[in-house]
Image (tube, rainbow, N blue to C red; front, side, top):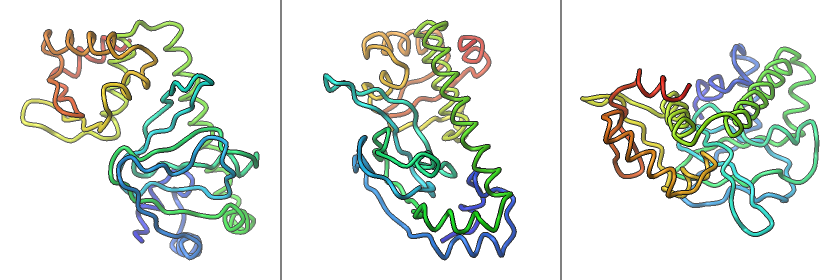
Length: 225
């Protein structure tokens, strides 16, 4: 296990070697292939997970079977920390959208470790606050932004975490299907595809399989406002 992966997580940022090594003794690696479910909404949960590599989607399912994709997470992000403070069934489902490597940690082991390290407890509160802030932004976007604006903002958010340079722009390999991208934006697939096609026609982006190349970052930022 890579100690820098653990330190890259918000919860464990700034820990010294002793504290990080002590924590890693409790952790176990886990691999997920694309399409594998880590856990379902309603499952009992007693572990949190740190993403070492790959991407996973977090979503909820409505009573009629429709899926609402809440977010896509990647390396350094944490899954399942809510049940540390509020034990109970999982509130979301998590599925790998690419080959993913995780580190799992039992909540009872984390609690024991936190008892001696109050600074890490503050980091956990920071991680929860960031999650709440992101949720509030998503709700605000659904109320105040049109679909093209939400698509632009979603692509920029994905770019901030999963992009790499391309010869003519920034490659965002999001690994999402058209339906999953529409769920993330909170709109129909047809409406999202229309927005993407319009961005491509204007030269903002180039569409590729499960990815986009952002050709004009400034115009995309302006459209996301």
